[in-house]
Length: 291
Image (tube, rainbow, N blue to C red; front, side, top):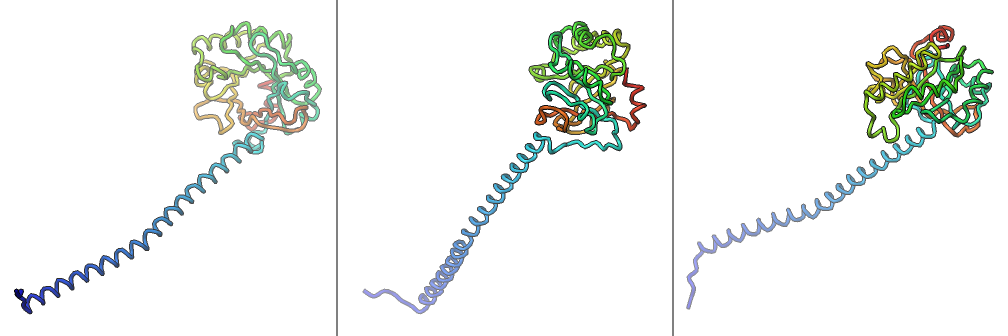
């Protein structure tokens, strides 16, 4: 049996086959491109991933270095210019050990507040020695009390005065530190009760020495207890990252808590530094802040 065959059918068959060849060639070309592009995409992805990881590692290393420099006292976030803040002082306590006041007073310091008492039963173990020996140098010195927020204010004031004695003649006005520390950093005491206790403490000081004490606090404790409640009192704001916030009427600024200089026993230990807000001479400062 013979199949029907014609030249016309051969023509269509060849055309159809030609079309298949073209399609196959195109497919091969696309496949080749995909084979080339796939490794490139993977390579670019690996490069991007490496750059991201390397950048993260660099940031971590930089942050670690900043932390180390800060906690070793080699990096300060604040550097108040002495031309703008000529009156600067230190907060000292027993952690510093024995202080050689003749040396310490020559370390670019014009004043110092010495830790005296806390609450109604704690007295700094170096206070008596510091209080006595600091009289032998030209440094202006005063004492401060660490206020316990949950303790009777009047009793705290009386305890502080007992440690000070009857006269503060020639000394800086007394100071009281009011901070939210320990458990109070999480759950702060009632404002009304705390303000009442602090007011009672201040009244005892005023009646005993005839001056209003300096209130030392952080931005947070200022906003919580001091603002609008103790407007007539001088204020020292502690902020080691920037100048005190706008809206705070401050007199002193504790700008660094990781300072080390010569003149005390435990030279690896840090202490805090403060400045007075105005560019004034020491004699003008004495008229306002020395008893």
